Image (spheres, rainbow, N blue to C red):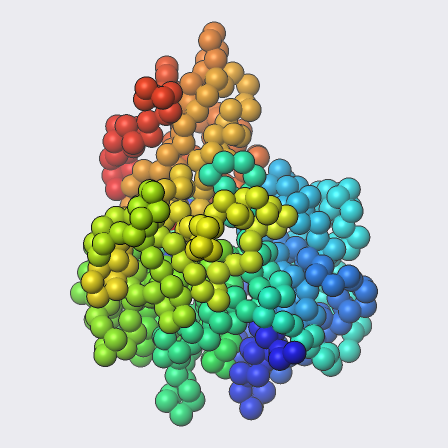
Length: 517
Ligand code: MLC
Ligand code: AMP
């Protein structure tokens, strides 16, 4: 069997000089800290030896909800090195959300922040998880304590292309959250394609330095950004939190930056963002949410750089990208570029018929990057693929004659706020459980900072009085704060069509200018 392990590929790309700096922290406890490539190798080996010492069955899941740190990245590498399955969890998730993920994925190991140990270990042990460790951003916690007793040599476990590497939970338009199963083949093929397509530079070409300012529990920060730099043996300037002023101050040392649109609009609000600050930069990449054409234009005007917008999702990693090289075409604003090499993308009408160039339809994809299915949901998986095995993305768009893909909307009822996905059905479910609530409707409205802002309309039960702010406060205890509506309106009834379906388009139109977006 040839080895398709994502870890092996990343490790093979480490530079010959293992004592060169791989990562410098820009914030967080003790910053600046300098980690060499040898540190990444030894650290991931020691952590992988912790897993080896636990004698875990093949395919065991390691669920991780911790603050961003270089050690958290090493933990990810260690899970891959040990041939286990990584399950990253957004650190905004609350108890109800975590309980579901742990119950569904049945991880053998859970790693959490020390301050969450009491409640997470309680629910993990109840669900049969035997090992719960802690990891803090200040490099304390039981995981590193255990690792410090371990040897720093570990033979990476070989993996086949279709072996599972990670499970990423994505909420659904209806029902429960689904765990998208990504294989080593998915991650590796995508990382290699992006490495080539975005022209990562060899040391002879001057090399690259990535500013990493995204969370590492979703595709964008974990795979696209981290794999990108590691697979090129490139240094990262590591931000645990995005701070526009601090990031701009480090641009002169960097060549590549990746962000969701909110990061770009927040940097544009800083006078320090100038051509001079960006003089050494080679590439700015945006994704995870639509980049407004105003942002694209303002960025070009201010910095002289044309943002490269790309499109992807948890189930598929990256699907399309605007061209990097001039000879491949221009970076066209408002589009997400071409299907990446090896990715097939088509647009289909509601009856499954092919759409002509420029005609709007559902975006369907195929390729080595497309996931292996939803964890323990064969029926759901089947529904999301066409009979001829194309994955239905739930995004709606067009392809023009040249092959540029434009996303015009979503068939899935999804709000993307600051690059985080919020499924209205999930939030409505939580609202409807609150006392005195008859029903609710959640929509996304244009928001100048987050792109879309979550808003709820709530109908009280007969004889009950409700308060919008109190509803938002009650939700904060139950769901991640980014999902909590920024505004809650108490209304007499919801507009419905003849079929009884809530007309969310009317609600959106009615409140369009709420955030001044
Ligand atoms: C934070 N808040 C948000 C929010 N982020 N509200 C709505 N949407 C968001 N995205 C709220 C918090 O709950 C809190 O509310 C308040 O804002 C301040 O929190 P904070 O933590 O200080 O916020 P901040 O650090 O400013 O975070 C904003 C952000 C962050 C834009 C930097 O959201 C972020 O890093 N987004 C990136 C998401 C990402 O990586 N997506 C990739 C998904 S992968 P309160 O009420 O408590 O004050 C994917 C596939 C692909 O989609 O194609 O890439
Ligand atoms: P997630 O499930 O968190 O991976 O989010 C994936 C979704 O984000 C996609 O299905 C798209 O709806 C959206 N998305 C990602 N990149 C872009 C982009 N560049 N433009 C518009 N939407 C995007």
